[in-house]
Image (tube, rainbow, N blue to C red; front, side, top):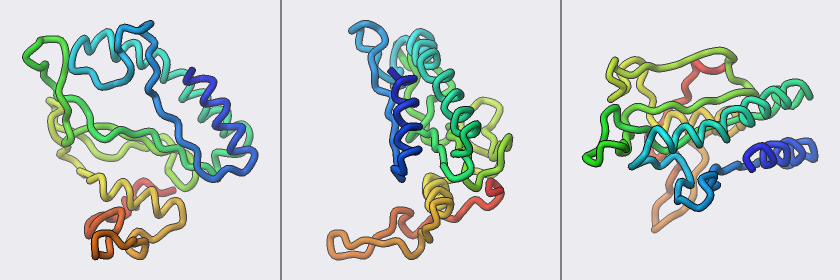
Length: 176
């Protein structure tokens, strides 16, 4: 299913659609309830299954976009809202959420290729080298889309708000 969605995403981009979101929520387990990366149990089985359906189509999509000349103007964002703790939960087979160390990647329009930014401690518990907040990540994405995150505000509950709150800085080191 992910591969078909990647092909559909590329076709939409070719037709001029400006924003396409792919979401991995399929149940490759045949109804056993393993529907995404949220692995509080059976992490080895769950993540192996999700990696099998995500890795190759994601790489193929980026390769296809590059081969067709679309990657130059297309920003690919592969992300989550948190990672996984480096230790097992009480059930011995899963890991709880970890908002302090996780990986996202950007590719394409305005991003350095083959570049890594930031590093966690040796345990994988917390970012220790160039820690980047979600606000920074969002400010960088908005910048790459041609939007100034400090000027992009909306009215909510009587206040002017920003997607990056009062925080967020463009991570210039990742820009090409």
